[in-house]
Length: 290
Image 1 (cartoon, helix red, strand yellow):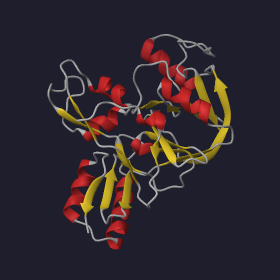
Image 2 (cartoon, helix red, strand yellow; image 1 turned 60 degrees about the horizontal axis):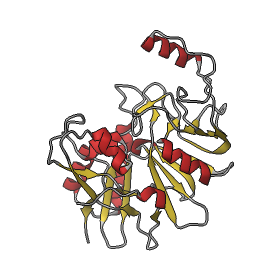
Image 3 (cartoon, one colour; image 1 turned 45 degrees about the vertical axis):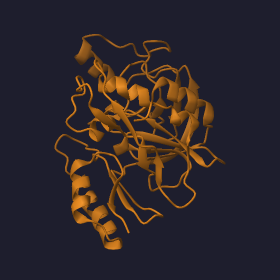
Image 4 (tube, helix red, strand yellow; image 1 turned 180 degrees about the vertical axis):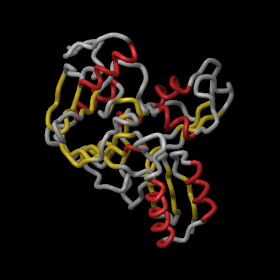
């Protein structure tokens, strides 16, 4: 049993032996009165990630004494390790500082169904401190429908601004996508935004100080991460695929192609692979060892 540690601020060292496995295995014993949302703040993990790692646990009334798996161990995404990398199914942001052999990892909120965050390769166009928010016509209509109140055409910086204190504007489309903070106590590690990427206030404050304009940003969609580790282990990490609608089945074929590709290249245990695909717990599992 490990105590909560703020490893993200210090960074995880990148493996030097060709491995893609990083992080530490952590567990937490539920205390009386705990909620999963409160536990996410201890370890700086996302709510959906914690729920998927611990299927069947009541997010509001977890059983005292229950041992939870904390999803702070992961496989690095299969992309170049530079700048900002966001993997949508993971609901995680990876930051690879230039000239350093380390990575910093943060839980994020992304676009909800119908307002999905797109995949992209872009850069940071502008850094904005104390941003104002100009809600779209759709956002204003949704707000009125939900609350019966009209949003102003421009929401100034401050406690009522959902962008928080810092924003990174992306050079994509009409520059409408931001990596920003929040003024709410929920939504990190969930699909709740109108398409932007939302971070905890402390995380965006730190990230804002580290990145520069023109920093590379890559937003990817990798629900399955696969690795052949230097020690001979074959590992699989599966996340729930991103749906575009409530009845979307688009990514079932994507899953199958990835599994077939890996299975043709490596000797793996099909039963263990099938179980990992069905459970999609978002935790690296060994599906074969040499």
